[in-house]
Length: 151
Picture 1: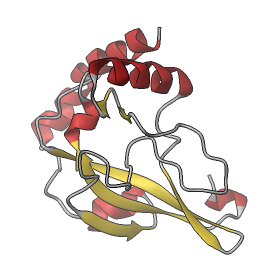
Picture 2: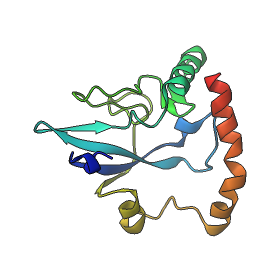
Picture 3: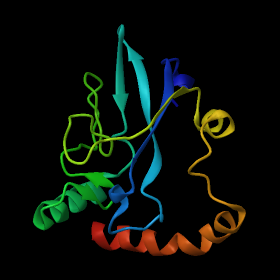
Picture 4: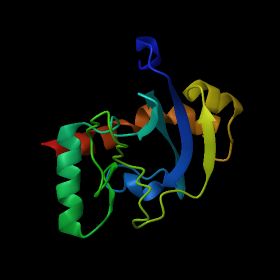
């Protein structure tokens, strides 16, 4: 959407702890692929993943994490944000502040878009055909847990 509006942008891919999904789903892997957008505005590059989680889920997840004494889960990092002001970096999941836990173990670099990453990027975290076919059966559970958290 940014590029469509004439704003230079690209996807930066890393892996992050699968613990970010605790309480919603268990991907059965220690890390999950994650991307954030690098946006060029007014001669600066900003990194953003604050668009991933909506305000209702973000606020409820952060409240739950604080009450549980955890930093990650329900799709968010406790110290993140779900808003971007266009003047600073903004992360809801991939915090690079040295906070617990380490934000990533692998940096895959910059790609034009998601399709470019999956076509050229690392294959270590790819789902096999059986899992890809089973995803439609699996997704209603995490979606229901996210909705219950929002309300």
